[in-house]
Amino acid sequence: MTAEQILNTKGKNVYSVLSTNTVYEALKVMGEKNIGAILVIDDNNLKGILSERDYARKIVLKDKSSKETFVHEIMEKNVITITLSDNLDSCMELMSTNRIRHLPVIDNEIVVGIISISDVVKAIIESQKDTINHLNSYISQ
Image (cartoon, rainbow, N blue to C red; front, side, top):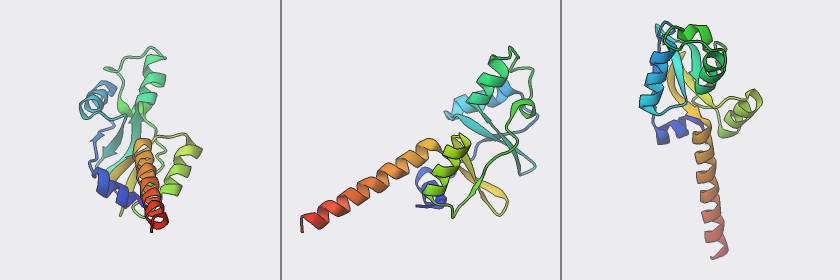
């Protein structure tokens, strides 16, 4: 299974904020969209990613104000991305090795979607169900 197949199943919604937004504004969008991370895109260019973990570690634990801190001050700037053709195994490897939960999907230098760890787990479960069903039908023939 590829990133493109996962996006075709889950949808290609891309939610983003500007690096000049406040962390509070970014958190509001994340809450409204029920997402755990949001992309930071300026002028159609991926500049970073902001996660709930970033907020907890870089705002709450450092006693900063989310209404006074800008996204660019705490976002992760070194974003690990994948392409539409990357497979499930490579996504799992990247997430595990880099201890991340979200992978933006890039096509022709444009963000076309994002895959989360839960998307990967769902895809694995579906793949295993298909394999089990196939084996069951093979055995019962």
